[in-house]
Image 1 (cartoon, rainbow, N blue to C red):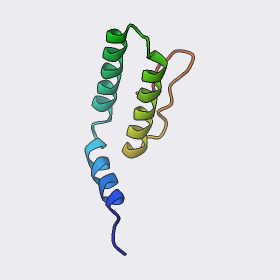
Image 2: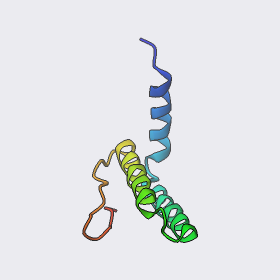
Image 3: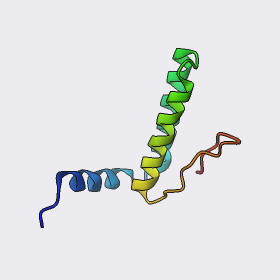
Image 4: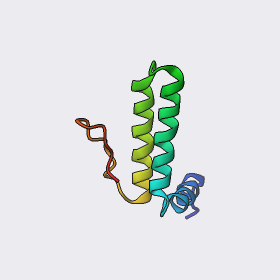
Length: 78
């Protein structure tokens, strides 16, 4: 059975993410904070949603699906 293109891309993404989860999450946070600072938090809810989705993707691909944000503090697991 041939491997689909998406399976191949998923495998490559997992290879890039594995071992680099902390740096990727840091970059996601910095990018979101930069956007918030430039827009005066006008789109903060949407930016936070994208950040959470990106963190979830990194966790899923990197093998750590527990990447939900703690709503009470806004902190994400390390």
